Image 1: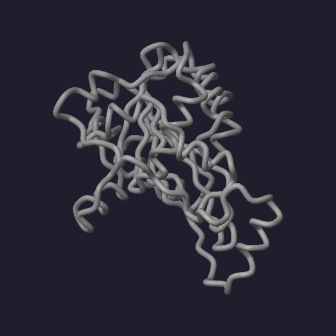
Image 2 (image 1 turned 120 degrees about the vertical axis):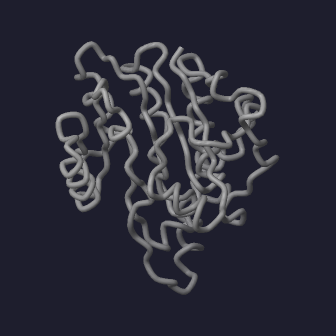
Length: 245
C-alpha cells in the first residue's frame, strides 16, 4: 500500500510479535525508500493497539487490517476478541475501515462474529465494499475443530487432548504484512483444546453473515500470503470490510 501511495499522503504501520518478520518488512520498506512512511514494530496488538493507535496525532487512522492470524485450530486464545474490539472502538474515528481476512473460513468467521457480538454499536458492515455482485455467500454452518471436546470441563478437555499421540509441534505465524496483525505459533497439544467461548463465537448466528465474503481485495495491496493462496494454490480467501460508525 505504501509503495502504491506515490503521493506519500499516508503513513503505514505494521504490528506483529515476530521480530524476524518485522526486520524483513522494514528492510523492504527501506529498500524502496519508504522508511519515512512505512514502519513495522514489535508488539502484542491485543495489549498495545489502544496505546499505539491512540497516540497518532489527531487519531486520523483511516484503515486497520487484521490479516491471516493463526488458523482457528491452532489458537487457544485469539487475536480478535472482546478486548481488541473494545480497544479499537475506543480509539478509531468514525469512518475508519477495519479489514479482516483469512484463508480459513472459520478464522474469518470468528473475527467477524467477535466484532458483531462485542462491537455492533460501534462497527457495521461497509455497505459500499459489500455491494451487490462483490461478494460470495458464507457457509451455512461451521463445525468446531473437536466436537467431542466441546462443553466438557477444561481439565477433561485437556486430558483428552494430551492423551493422543504427539504429532509434532507447529509454530510460526500466518500473519503477512498487515497494518495491524498478530500471531503466535502454538503446538499440536493446544490445537486440541476448544474453549466454550471460542465455540460460541464460531457458531454464533449474527446478521453480518448475510453480507457475505468479498470476492476481491478491497484495499488493492495483497499480502504475500494472499498471492500464494489465490494464485499458487487456487484456494479461497475470506474477506470482510467493516467501518466505524
